[in-house]
View 1 (cartoon, rainbow, N blue to C red):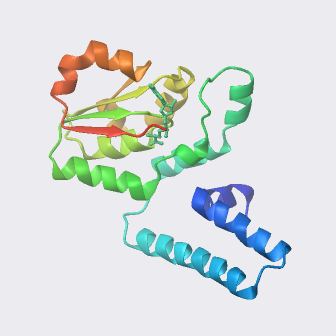
View 2: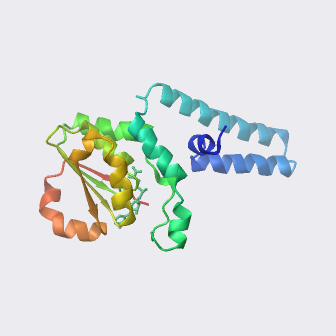
View 3: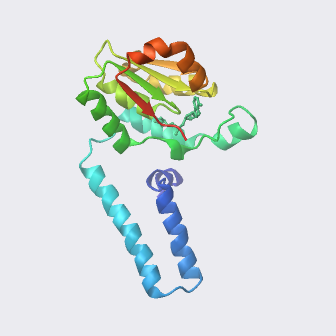
Amino acid sequence: MSKLEHALSHYDPTVLEMQRALKLAQDTGASPDVVLSIETALELVDLREKYTDSVTTGETEVFHQILTETYTHDWKSLRTDGTITYNLSPIMLTGNLEGQFLKSMVSIQNAKRVLDIGMFTGYSALSMAEALPADGELVTVDFERYLENFTGDLLRESPHSKKIKIFIGEFLSFSFFWVPRLWGCQLCTFILF
Ligand SMILES: C[S@@+](CC[C@H](N)C(=O)[O-])C[C@H]1O[C@@H](n2cnc3c(N)ncnc32)[C@H](O)[C@@H]1O
């Protein structure tokens, strides 16, 4: 398995923590019951992932591209040299399961306008934009100026990017100036942490 494949399949922080716990249990000679219990928990998470994957619409090329670019980008160096101020990391990425869920929410509500707070590399924005009608609009907000071009370029690979407007700035200032527009919004996702 390549480094990238490994990263893509082990980005769940809960799994990483359980793997750490398993190694600790093994290294410190914990009881076999404890080791077996952690192994079983890991297996259950894996089975749950496989099941949800098998019943969820697969990822298209443009989303795979976003995922790959997000995982292979050197966010740490950008933070160190001051290009970005937030601690951006691939672990923040929405991913296919959540993306399909958000897309369903847009469809179910027949939404025409969506506000996406916290764009990062655009996975949630594009997922929801795909479900909007041709004259629909999604505004995605992020305060990292670096993402304007980085994510903008990724999103332009999809024809649905025409429905997406990127707003670079602090969300609070955005909401202050855009309050009248926010009232007309039918779906608002808050994906910040
Ligand atoms: C968890 S990531 C969002 C994940 C993204 N929705 C996706 O689909 O991959 C959070 C993002 O919110 C941005 N952010 C955090 N606080 C913010 C604020 N107060 N105003 C604007 N953007 C903010 C960060 O720069 C980061 O890109």
